[in-house]
Image 1 (cartoon, rainbow over the protein chains, first blue to last red):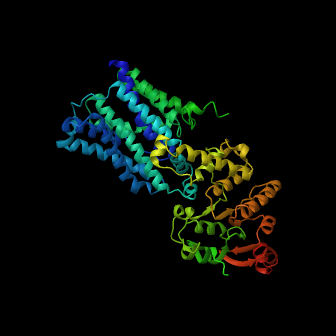
Image 2: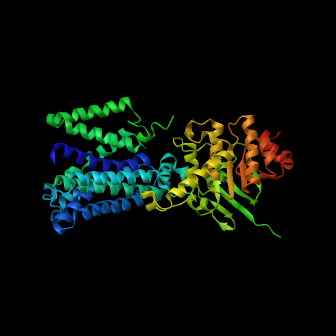
Image 3: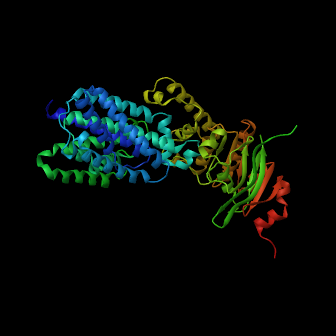
Length: 277
Length: 256
């Protein structure tokens, strides 16, 4: 598959997860500090289903996404009825709980040492195909009445509810879709690495996802994808200088903050740059 | 023939802490009417709109719309029954274009989640219809040339008109206008006057309008309710209101 191929796969996986977070944070206005939890759910579901139950990898990926979606939905119902940042707080609890469950449920997850021996089903074509399909679906969703509803909830939930929108319902829907995307990304990661470990899905990973969305531009899908490419490449290309690459990673983030505080793209999309003025 | 009131408030009360914002207020409006709601600042006029649209729970009393009790319902349950409103302090979606703002309220053009994800089925047809409808409404309020401009960058008077267009997109039977003329210049007030008449006469929509611009209220509202300290102090025709002693006292202060 080669090194370049590996990086492209990683780019696809990160981009799928970032699209999920972008929908929730960028388009619906809900901050999350725990989306790695949904990736973990997807990864372990796909891993366990393929290794222990001989399920076909494609179904295992979908199952991973669906489980993450169901968990997101269940967490969303109580927390998203409230306005404000309750979900952000709950998401920290979620990501920590999931990590602790994965570390301690030895009989199923094999604990903190990690889960080895997963079939390497995430080949280059699989990763690219998943990315393309999910990107097209996300663009469709945003350019529909649901996208308008999400943005209305983000910009002014009071005005949205006085246009007859049940804002809590749309917030939960956005979270569920977002959970699905991260679940699928996690499942693909499991099939790429062949080995998964609870520490891969900690708060660091969650903040990385949210920071990609913020740096790409809240409310710009192409911007967040661009940010995910830049940040993934920076961390990968400077791998030879090991620990010091985090310095560059930090430097890039600071540079974007200073130069483009509204994110790389603001709330515009790449394909709209020309049309608007 | 007895006419049934479209909207009826009976003994509606609401307090915030010790302040009685609305105090046993009763009035009703019949289909097709245009009612003015006036009163000095802080009289509780906007609170009345907030109570009708379900933003606050009632402390007491009852609100019925088309004979149905809507006192306990939430905004997203009340609005689809046929009530739309604008806001005193504009509540547009500032980053979205004008036409998108109106399309957000075109809720009748509906399609399933699956159709949204795939852009198949009814998606194209519905989106087109919503877009056409939104453009028609922008034309009606006279800002069609600004359709693609971000709502937050429109001149203030245009933003007020855009809010009316957005409210009309809900296809309401009852339209609540909260100070539509605030911040408008005399020319724009004249246009607003004509617009409100068209909404009433051509679209047949019942209107309650809160307004401080007395000339406008007197011209467009055959009947006016005047509030002070949350209670109704007068109700009647513009001529009756203009010389009502309590109204004069409320606005000009009482002689000691």
